[in-house]
Image 1 (cartoon, rainbow, N blue to C red):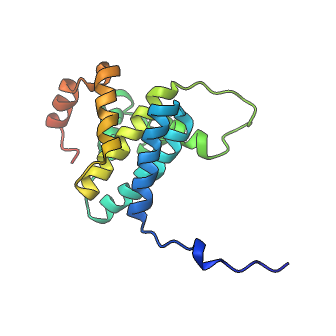
Image 2: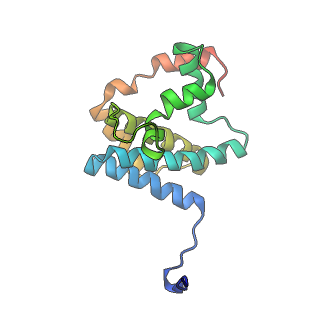
Amino acid sequence: MKIPETDPANVVVLCQKQVALSQLDRAVLLFMNEKDFVASVTLACAAECIFGEALKDAGINTPTDVIKGILRDKFAPALTPKQVNDEAVNRARNFFKHKVGDIEEPTEFDLQTEAISAIARAICHAGLVTGELSEHMIAFFEWLKANRPELRDTEELDRELSDKQYW
């Protein structure tokens, strides 16, 4: 079987920053306009991964690493960092991306909250890497403030961050 030649009109040159920004903006639009939380998590986590690796390459601890540290210290000191990652922070992402057990077995998620978490983490990573936020990212935080104010109470988080050196 001969593989057809690529039509030069279909060739696009991209950098991973462009890809991650596109994924993240699309995740926000799917979240806000279509309530497609599964696709939002998948796309936001893909962007988070690209930006997270860029931050790590620059020697910067990622916001997700900070979250993992707080979760482990506060709720699960007996768990390894990998267990915190797999069972708390990335449970939904891993379920949406990888075969986990029987594919017919149902698993319960709070999809909206999972999507909010994934998008917020990815936006934090993107902001640290690019130094700016898109109009969609800003609109997401405006939506969050208006619709889920209980998720924006940061006093306890501020105390946690000041007590330990996560950064």
